[in-house]
Amino acid sequence: MAELATIARPYAEALFKAAGQDLAATATWLDELAAIASNVQLQQFADNPGVTSAQSFEVITGVAKTALPESAKNFLRVVIENGRLSVLPEIALQFRALKNAKTGSSDATVFSAFALDAPALAELAVTLEKRFGRKLNLTVEIEPALIGGVRVVAGDEVFDTSVKARLEQMKVALMA
Image (cartoon, rainbow, N blue to C red; front, top):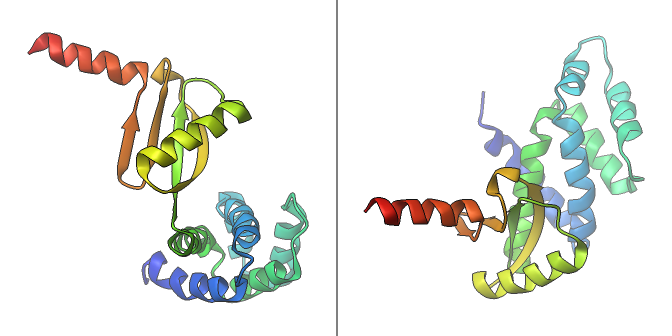
């Protein structure tokens, strides 16, 4: 079977062209559909030969938390009818990469020992954008093992100011 990236590329590119100036809203609903499509039970349901495309569509749209625009529904119908529901998460990744390339931004994950409130995250975003030299789309994940501080991963770049990293640096320095 062809690689998922190869299968997903035409869908992501077509959706990117169709989105036009509405990239942010398209990315939002596409991410939600990708999260739903990545559910193993849903994939088993959709792969069942006794289940029609319309039934799969109804289940997915019924699970979606937000009201999907007509363009999202049409895109979802095409993906389901072509048997590409399992590729939807990869389509979302490639779409986000195209969107980021156009807007000159990057996705970054902030790993924090504690939850960050909105003002702290906004202040951190300003600092990180200066550090990385580009606009960042931040997502936060809680990782208690860090003890304190944050670790930021943006593509292949890592910025680690966590207590855990500092303790490791001290350990290496003391052992040298």
